[in-house]
Structures are given as C-alpha cells and as structure tokens.
Length: 513
Image 1: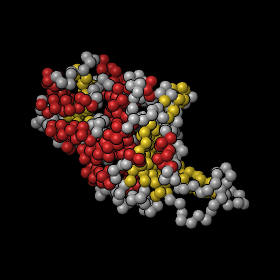
Image 2: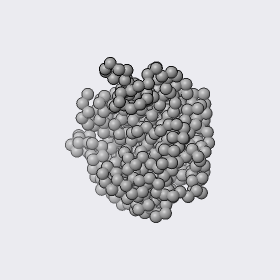
Image 3: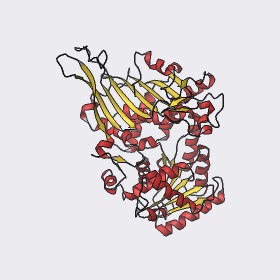
Image 4: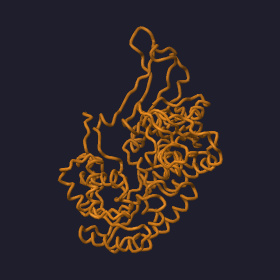
C-alpha cells in the first residue's frame, strides 16, 4: 500500500467505529480556546470527525477565553483546521462547520461572564437543536481548573437542563503536581461533577499505536502465553524528545520530566503492557486492571532513580543552548529535563521482571518506544555469529514504536547464507504507514468522540491519578532536598551517565534506538 499521506476519509473513520458510535446533539465548550491546543489539535480533530460523518448534525463549538477576539476567532480556527489538520481549504464541509464555531470572551472568575455564557448556549440550543447537551473542555492552565469547575456548579451548568441527556467535562493534564494537590483537585471537581461526568484526558491514549498494545496482546493468541516472568527478561519504555522546552520556561520550571511525562504518559504505557486481560473492554473493567498494576508497583528507592538536565550541545547538526540558558529559566535551576526509573511489579505475572523507564528533552532523537526483551534459551546451541553482527547470540525482542514511524517489530536470530553456522539478528516489521497509509489524525479524534459518547475507557479515573502520584511524589520530595550538579548531559545525547549506570548495574543496557 502506498505511504502517500491521506486525510481521514469518511469510509476510513466509519470502518474503525461501531455502528452505534454516532453521538447525540451537543455543544462543545472549550475554556482557554485562544491557546495553541485548540487551534492546532482540538478544532482539526473535531473537523476530522465531521469529515467522517461521526458528529451529529446538531453540533456547535463555543470557544471561551479572556481576550476579546469576536469573529476573528472562527477565522483563526479555520486556518488552524487547514494547516494543522491537513484539510483542503475548498472542502465543502469546512465552511458549514466553521459557521457553527462561536466565541465568548470572559474572565474565568467573572460571575457575569458565566451567566452570559449560559444565555449564549441556550440560544445556540434553539438555533442548532443541540438539546442542552454540553461537553466542557478545560484547556486552560491548571491553576484555573478548580475556579472554572466551581463557577460552572454555582451557575447550574454542571447538571443537564430539562430535556437534556448529559453534561460532561474534559480536564487536561497536568492533573495536580503531587499527590496532595491531585487529591485536592479531585475533591474540588467531585463536589460539582459526578465521577461519570469527568474525563481526565491524556492525549497519548488517543494514539492508535497505544490502543494497539491491547489488541496486540489480547487479540493474538501467540503472544499472551509468553507475556510473563517465565519468558520476559525485562521491559524498557523510552519517551525521548529532541526538542527543548519550546519557550515554556515558567511551566517547565514547575513541572520537570517526571511530572510532565513519566507520571502520566509513561505510566499509562506501562499499564497497557503489564495489565491483566479485562473481562470486557468496558471502561470500568479496563480502568480496574490498570489501577491493579500501579498499586502492585513497589515503592521506588531513590537509588533506582536517575535525573538529568541538558547543557549546550548539538541536535540534528544544529548547536543549541542548555536548559539554564532558555528563556525565563532560573540560571541555577534544579529542574530535571530527564528522568529514569527502575520499577518492580509485585504480582504473579511480573515478579522479578524489572521495568526500566526513561523520558527526557534534548535527547538524540524523537522516539517513544516500548521494548520487550525475552530471556535467552536455557541452553545456547549456537555461539558463533557472522563477523558483521558481532559476538554472541542476541536475545529476542518485541519493539512497539509509538512515535514516529509507528509500528511493531520482532527481532530474532537467523542463519546467514553460507557453509558456516553464522547467525545474525533480523527484524520482522509491521509499519502503520505501509499497511494503512499516513493519517492526518492527531489522536484527539478518538478521545473527543468517546467523551461526547460518554465512553471513559481511555480516560483516567481519580483512583488511577492518585495511584501514579503516590509513586512519584516521594521521588519528587527526595530530589527536592538533594541538589544535583547540573547540567549533567549534553543536548543531543541519550541522557546522563547515571541513567546508564541504573540499568548496567543489573547487567543490562538501554536499547539502541
């Protein structure tokens, strides 16, 4: 199949969904709509759903932010859909879609603004037949989450009006910055919304390759039988970025790699790899199995952690500055831009199998990959290899590439043609682009559709959020009291030496990506 880029077609989207997956009429209300996320991701994703015939005809979008943008907002969103969504400007569905994109300017603590929003939504219900159904999306900075939620409740916008079926809210990450703040935010949100109304989003779970981890494991009989401590030596998860902080100095100074990536993205990937088969693919069952994994992880000793901060270096042939020289970053910052952990899951499936995870900025390349390394055979009958392949027989590996070049590869040994018994590793590859074409989808399509439908399978429950923060908070507290000599790795490398030491002391090494 050609790897030529294709946009999401109606046939392709509908083929990937159940016949009953078209949602009821509603209005999507996006708080913080003047930010980059709405223009680059959310509106393109909603239009992709429109292209695929997966949005109801009775649908509208209202952007809410503080700036007085007026009609300029819809025009800006049109540009975002075209540029960020790979959409033809002459698509016949584009203009009717943008006509249903409205804007409401208000401060998030302004009672009058919420009453004005309430009036606008009621008028749009009449104009578009949206029946009072609401999806509130909180795409603001985290400090506004509780304020917005409280005001929605105070103005009676947290429950369906007469004749409506639902009111739901999506809350962006980061959800808290440690265990106490996550619990407090959960309490604030649950005072206003019931748990089944709340959708805590992690955009990684919208990626096809992440969802395919479950399909790979549970829809193929050849893998699940060996997916345990009897056959697997260890698991590695890498979430590497070659970019720096991209002008987000104030945010990253309060976040760091552990909060920004490991506590959410990486822990979600780990749960999909390690979870037991759920009794069904319903939200409650999948979430329950994920939480069991996180709660089975033993407290992480500080000796099983590593952190780093990038200094100046060369990335993709270009010289770049160090983290402390970035705009609006403390010149003596102790914020980590790299984090690595060794985790142990104490249950019957995984006892004794270490999980090594790492994530960082300004690394050698952009790649997110899961590596499953299998144990060597108990008796190695073959010891020699071809000179080009190096000494020793390499272990079998399954690698799942989340981004970029999404796909799955199985590495195994094969005899090199010739009279001698020389063995080299070879890969059996599956590529998403080669099999299905390159999609312009950004991952939010599935998550937005699921939220409108009320399907919480790919969203976080409060118990899961608190379980992962319970693991990370002691590490953050310990790091805060222990100064490090930063920077300790050059931009364009694979991180600090302490990360290599973390895995090498167990006689293992990070996979060469």
